[in-house]
Image (cartoon, rainbow, N blue to C red; front, side, top):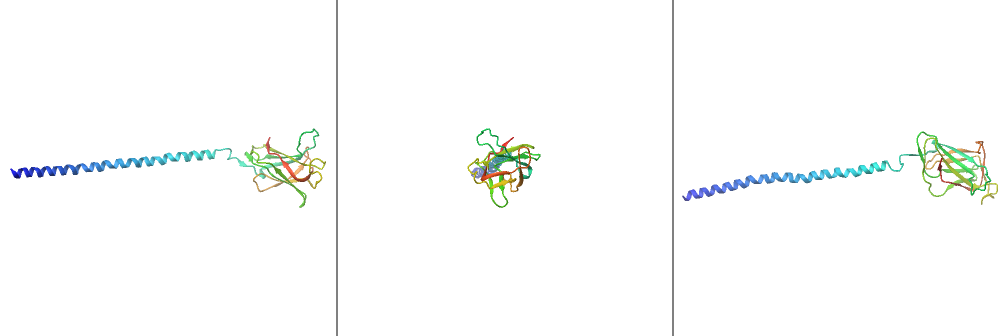
Length: 211
């Protein structure tokens, strides 16, 4: 009887050990899905983070006419016209006009003042001067920008009328932001060759206006 009870107790002990050893693997198996969930969440997060990057690129690409090329000197047809004194008493009338026509097939932007220089050989010169930073002007094919020019003249009008050393039949012109210039002849309002006499060393340029 004593042996039977001992055997029975030993059998129960083995059963308990067997039960505990068989239940531990499911805990290990169940831990794997729990640890996999954060990994899936982490892989999803970078995918969401890429959306703002794409949005920034799109905004940058389509912002404010940045795709329009700058107007180059060689793609513009320039005209420099001496204006007659209207005698109407207009306040500060323009003495001449510099016109740039887009001769290309695509639109371009004129951003700033062109470089303008009147020379008498290698001697005296008068340079174009503009105030501030004018708003960019976009020119479609065949469209033009007009820049009014003002300076002291030989006829005694203007503060520099006693210093009239520059008489020129042409001017050197370079588009804003370009490095290559062209020689533009002076014409009168009938399109005939003319000369400009400038007193002083400065020609005031108005901001380019599209017309």
